[in-house]
Image (tube, rainbow, N blue to C red; front, side, top):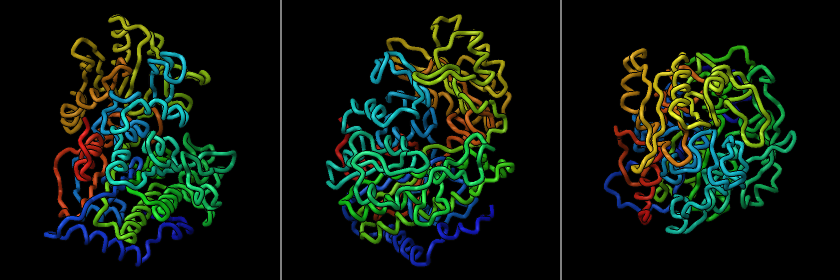
Length: 515
């Protein structure tokens, strides 16, 4: 896709020097027979809603070079539900499946009343930093990869990203610092935990957060200034450039051993325009398209790799590049731009849900729920009759392919299939679903997990025109590149998952095993 912004060159240009540095960096990792130095630094980069096919479709040079010098896992996938940012950014640094976390989706039930009334329901992504960390803090410190890197190898661990809750969850309660953006009127300013003064007091890191860059009110997910895109002011660029600049500032000024970086630009524009598989919304005159933000993200990847080389840490740094989920365009969109749940969340105003959620609440009793490219429902009445009524309602919905019901007994919590219409789908969809559906749904099983999980066909969704969250292959497929110093590049055909990152990184870094 052509980039048609005249000003794009200032942040898309990759200089010859940077290319040379990156080439040198990558060449160092393919040397065979060399004695491996101690690997005592870790950089994990998550590109929100990045799909592996984008690397070649959009000709992303830094992703290509890293792929050519790393372990490349073409069969990698998210490996859990929900395939959401707010879930994956807690899964990656802990290695836990969602059922072991306080939430499994964008909706959650606070069973024990950790932040308020027992049994209250919340939209997870709208919880404050204090609330998110309060849920995570009871987990053992040793469960967090960053804390273990710091305790074993010394040095500080930072999480950096312009999307607030992504950076908070990625760093967790034990990071030395969390650097993110917080909206303050028409501006976005540095915020987080132990934000270094060379960032908080530097006017460069305050950006405009009011200019919609042509999106205005013409889309359900318009750009909020330069929060997720660079913008027009070269002295105050936002989005992934902001994240890259903040990350490099930390790497320059801190004795770091761990960097957890999350880039949100791809996700924002992909949700807004639905360009995952071709032309998206043409009626939205956005100054940024998917091709633009992918080039911007690729440039930041090159800058971070070049910084590692500049600091002469190439032979000591484990680099992991992945995504928190993939994405699809919702050709069959059930949303209404007001609410993605059947019921109000704690502290939120009542809103009119989409028709199908309202219908389910009319024929049965729902406690709460959330929908995007799959559906999670918590029942207010646990009787078999109420469950059956809701399942009958789901069976009337076009796009529902399977429904799983939660079962709890002495053996624990699990999900069983109670409805299947897989025979209506393509052979490829059926093959993927029969291999992965039960596995993915059961990663949610836990004390606070939903009573019913409904999976949807390709191209069906509620949340945004470009969506994710569910079990569809395009939503589950993610890039997975792991550059291990001193190791030959290789193509690995196993289905590496986000849950596998923390234990594999711990093994490579020589961290003590979890007890």
